[in-house]
Image (cartoon, each protein chain N blue to C red):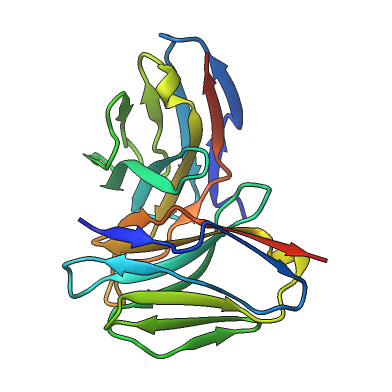
Length: 116
Length: 112
């Protein structure tokens, strides 16, 4: 029962470095999401995807890029890391909207990223 | 734009007390879906419940119950006879067309 798997769990970056946060799900969900959670706050949507080859911006997309080449994988890339990107990043997936409406999202365990 | 307001930032109770977490969801959409998630100290997010805007029936699952009132856009969560294991951050969230908007969370601490 892997569900949504995120790697790495922790990472420290220097300002200006780049990295990719990996996310994969084995539930055959069409929809995938990236969120960030700053201390004491709720989650904010960075990017989302409704299927392979389709991505769209969320509430806070600046400084990030995504791609969705397969149903299973949805990596998040930081090109030029900045201290403001220090956060916990969560990947999530869900079934597509159906007659019952929006489906619950299933979350990975998060990646704690510090940029110094 | 949607907005989720959780009235309590922190709540502290003693074991076996009942506790209610308040949530108000503001949206112009007539159809929407509301969720509660639990984030224990280990950090993962656990889905608890989904409710659509058509259904105002209360729901009970064990010690958990939820009350949705569309007229006030409130979706409150009650834990009966709280336990130490209930200590967590609880998030209320709402969606329109799949995009979740989260509240800032309520930190619940249950003392033995």
